[in-house]
Amino acid sequence: MADRTWLGAVTHLRAVREPGILVTLTAVRGHAPRAAGAKLVISAAETWGSIGGGNVEAVAVDRARAMLAANGTAPETFTLALSDKAPYEHGVQCCGGSVTVLLEPLPVVPAVAVFGVGHVGLELARILARHDIELHLIDTRPEQLTDARLAVLSDAVAAVHVHRVAVLPEIVLGELPAGTHVLIMTHDHAEDFALCDAVLRNGEFGSIGLIGSAAKWARFRTKLAAQGHDDAALARITTPIGLPDIRGKEPATIALSVAADLLRASSTVDSQA
Image 1 (tube, helix red, strand yellow):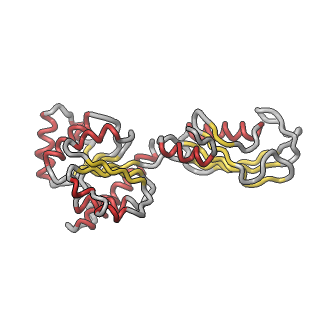
Image 2 (image 1 turned 45 degrees about the horizontal axis):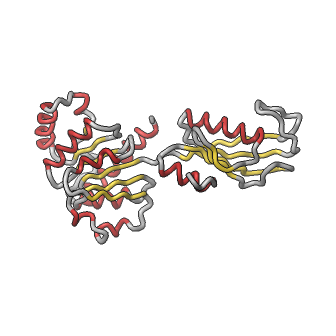
Image 3 (image 1 turned 90 degrees about the horizontal axis):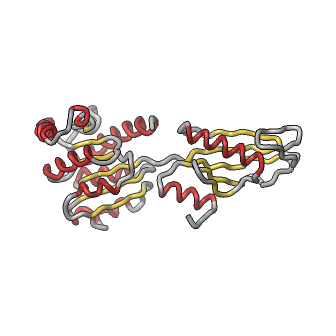
């Protein structure tokens, strides 16, 4: 990456979906190499910025990488005395002051792919777009993904990626990040089936949801089994989708139910990652 600043590093890690730790000097007492507010970003292999070098930075790097290895999600603080009477593993800094350091995890945000942006799909996108996620919208119908129709997402918190494909929406699966939660809700049962088959065969995905009735799933299950998918694979697909306690056939109600169930499931899956 060209931008070696801490802010550029945060942007870079988010873009490549790599976790990191943001380190900040929150308090400085007495003499220290850097003033309060100095920042450092640490990944598993690199660092950007500086909080002063020496022992304090080496300790911060060690602790940050331990947090990364443990998939830590809670911020941590520590205080170091910069005194020749306070030796540490990485040597001595004798500036005479002390510093307090805050370590904040920069997690990889969840990714969600919605295949089919019809009435329900668009309502679902409106809800999901209010969350800090990576949102992929896929449809084979150009009129469903016009700029005018998607203008309702213009203030999205999510990073929204629009995939306009003429045929074979399953080709987009190869472009999705590992762990993406997939929701299959196209206008065409043939497309839905092809996506179910493809998602079970390719890639490492999170939860997989299929919109539809029990009768639809019974037909799909038989056909997928005939294509060689065993019971364990078929169990990865959840259908119907949504929370059973939220009932109604209006697109907004269905979308609310699906979003609530997805966010619950994704938080559980991601916390175990």
